[in-house]
Structure formats: structure tokens, C-alpha cells
Image 1 (cartoon, rainbow, N blue to C red):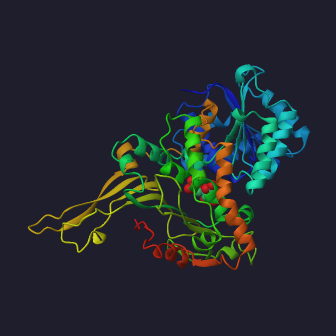
Image 2 (image 1 turned 180 degrees about the vertical axis):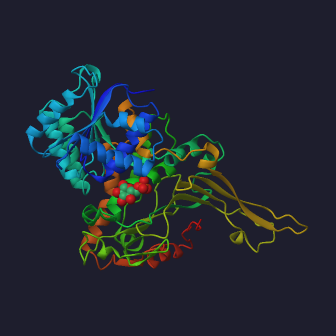
Image 3 (image 1 turned 180 degrees about the horizontal axis):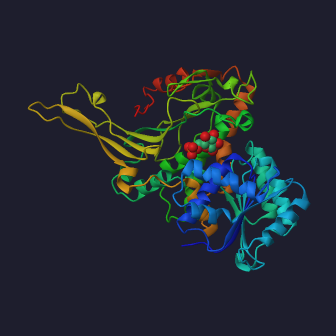
Length: 500
Ligand code: BG6
């Protein structure tokens, strides 16, 4: 279904996300005939830029990274893009924005649908929403026709308190139905297919509990460093950047109860329920079950990489973590006692995100192993990116006269089966937002629940740096030794994906 006509107004339009993700996503929707018949894209940022300069930057981004095969489609798409510069706090800038929107030749009636996308740091969210609301731009018609929706890029606040403050402010100006909090991991095809795998196949769910699962590992490894985002990353760090959102959302999809229907209300409620069941930290678990690290110089993919301290816009004595590994438990019937290991970091050995579910071993060994503990386990790996797909390790008889066992992998590769690489997460999420579907967006309670898990860790690190040392790791490794030790203490080890 194609959405109804709308104007898309992007705040922060001189920033990297817009050229790397948002404009390419909108372009791909356009090229696949999934954009509304009538639409415009209006970029807004402080940087002075003409419409033509904005289009040129957008064209470069599209052509460089995505090599579209239809230049005339790109040109048609770009003709719908415009730009206004101004200060986010200046009411006059919003008047200019309104005037500009009115000049677009998209043949709109006065009352059009509007999607505001805030690709901005959270400190600017309240002022932008206030100005929009003062100008009447966020007002909706009867029964939300026309509609006005505001998409908020993460981070949603800096900690629990600031997130609560932000929510209070936003809800004084917007109806909850107008607020779309984006976590792009939820828009990834392979993240969504976690739910499909679990709930569209009868064979996994009966085994999906502490009875048959030994441990779960979630890894989001990046081989890149902080790139040109040093300024932001310094004040965020890996825990806020990856765990408060992507990692916990993935965890909730892997472990939540089946929602009654695949609809926003039901899915969001189950995700929140799961996050609320995560065992609260104690001083001991904060100290023993969480490892933070920071990359030092090393070699990644055969190229020398500088250490975090030598990256641009990073303080020489920075104590910001670029790696976090943790072990946690979920206190409910299904997951009692199952260790969940999660790790994410920059400048790791390779880019690889996966969820690995290791099942318990068979209860009795009859094939010559001294005990069932020596039998290899079944492992289900959901490969999120790259090389998207699913691998299931099973054991079978090695051909020959002896009773020897061989482990092999039943594997499905997304690209081989479907003949395409998965579309970018932002395509799905932008389309859903235009269609008004909130299933893959975060609820206010979901964001709060995630901060409730992360906040005590941040406080502990701030108040007890001696008990939570910042471990150094070599760029190109799998993180600090302390992260391996964390699992070894429980008789486990990280499943490091093999080099391709
Ligand atoms: C972003 C983080 O949300 O996700 C980045 O701010 C990180 O630091 C990125 O690199 C990872 O996303 P993806 O889609 O490349 O795995």
C-alpha cells in the first residue's frame, strides 16, 4: 500500500545520517513506487545551503554509495527535495520553513500530512517540537486527517531522568500517537525475522526456554572506529549508543512471549514486559558481570588503526568505553537461570552481528562419549548482518563402518534464497511511519524500561571507577581479555564467528 501524500521535513539535514541513510532510504522507496504519489522533502539545518547545493550533496550520496541504475529517477526524486537554513530555536526560521513548504509544486491542498524527522541531538528535541507546535505545524485535523507525526532519532535522553523529562515535555505538546521513536535495528529484515523464526515455526518455541536452552549470546561487532562522530560518541559511549537501544531491543525479540497479534500495542507490550523482567543489578553483578573497554591502536582487516585517544575530537585522557560485554539474567518462568551474554564494540575483529542460541546437551550419551557433557550442543545462529541468514548446527553420523559423529550446519543465506540483499532498515521504518504503523517503533515505556537497566551501570561507573576498570583492547581483536574471562568463569566462551 502506498501512503497518502505528505511533506517530509528533516531537521538536522546537514548531518551524516541524512545522506548516509535517510535520503537513500527515501530514494529507494521512490524507485520502488512506495512513496506517496505526492510528496516533498524539505531539509532544515543551521548550515547555509541552497536547494541546488542540498540536491547536489544528496545526489553524490546516492550515486556514490548506491549506484542507482536510473539517473533520470534520481533527478526526478531530487527535484522534490528542498532546503531551508536557520537556527532550531528561532521562530522566524519556522516561518521560512512554512513558506518554503507552501512553494513546493507538489500540488498539495493547504492541509497536508506532515512527517517531521528529528535527526538531532536530544537536547534540541524540546525546542524544535515547541516551535513546531507554536506555529501550528503539529496540529492534526479531525481523526488525524491530515496527520502530523514526529520521528525522534535516538538517543532519547542521556539517562533515565533526562528521558523522563523529555517525554513529559513532548507529551505536553504532542499526542502519543504522533510520536515515533526510531530504533533502526527493529527495521532490519533479519531482526524482524527473529520473530518470524520463533513464532511461524512450531519446532523452536517448545524448546525456547530454560528447559532446553543453555545460554544466549548477542554480538554486535563493528570493525569501524568512531569515524567522524567523535564529538557525539565521547559523551555517549558504547553503553548508551548500542545497549540502551539496539542490544536490548534485540534481546527482547529473542526472549519475549508471543504477542497475540503482530500489531503495535501487542508487540510493544511484550517487549516492555521482557525488559522489565531483566534481573536488577546488584553491586556485585555491576562489578563482576559487566566489562567495559576502550580500543588501543592495532590492525583491522590488515590496516593499521589508531587507538581511540588518537581519533579526531576525542580527549587524550578520555574514559569513554568503546566496548561493553555483559552477562545478565531474566527473572521469569521461561528464562530463569539462563545466562544471557551480550557484547558490542567498535574496532573489533570484524563486522558481525548475530544472535546465537546454544541448546542444552542431550541428557544421556549413547555414542561413546564418556558423558553427555562431552557431546557437542546444537546451536542456532541468527545472522543479523552481514551474510544475513540462519545456521543450525546439528550432529549426524559420519559415513563409514564406525559410529562416528559429525557436526554440520543447516544453513540458509538470505541473499542466495531471495536473490537480494535485505533493504535498509530505514526504508521499512520510514514507510511504516508514513502509513502510521507503530509496531516497529519504541513506546515511551520501552524507552524507560531500557534506561532503567542501563542507568545503574552508568552511575556505578561514575561513582566507582576503581571497581569497574576500563580495559584496553587492541583494535582488530575481539575485545578485552576480561570479556572472555567473564564467560570462562561460567564455563562458556564467546562464539567468535569464523573469518569469511
Ligand atoms: C548507531 C550507532 O545507532 O548504530 C552507531 O550510533 C553504530 O555507533 C550503528 O555504528 C550501527 O548500525 P548498523 O546498522 O551499521 O549496524
